[in-house]
Length: 75
Image 1 (cartoon, rainbow, N blue to C red):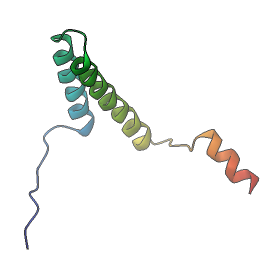
Image 2 (cartoon, one colour; image 1 turned 45 degrees about the vertical axis):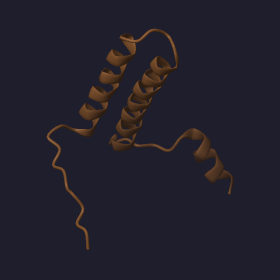
Image 3 (spheres, one colour; image 1 turned 90 degrees about the vertical axis):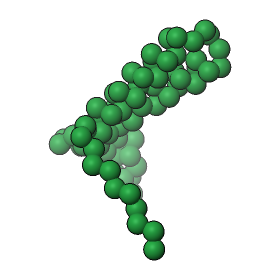
Image 4 (tube, rainbow, N blue to C red; image 1 turned 30 degrees about the vertical axis):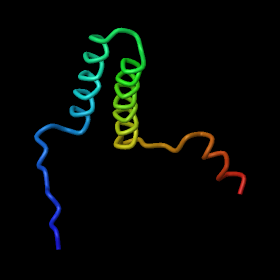
């Protein structure tokens, strides 16, 4: 059976996402307007969104969205 490679990260998940977003923004800034630049900007936004979602999920006061709360109350 093949064993899975394990990686010990020295930085937090949020730090790695922030660095990835910054790398993509720098790469996009070096390109002329076009498809490749837009792809880099999209990846940067995705990394930032992932960081925000992770922050929300790991917050101590995690609350469900109001829309879901209303659905559960109707049942």
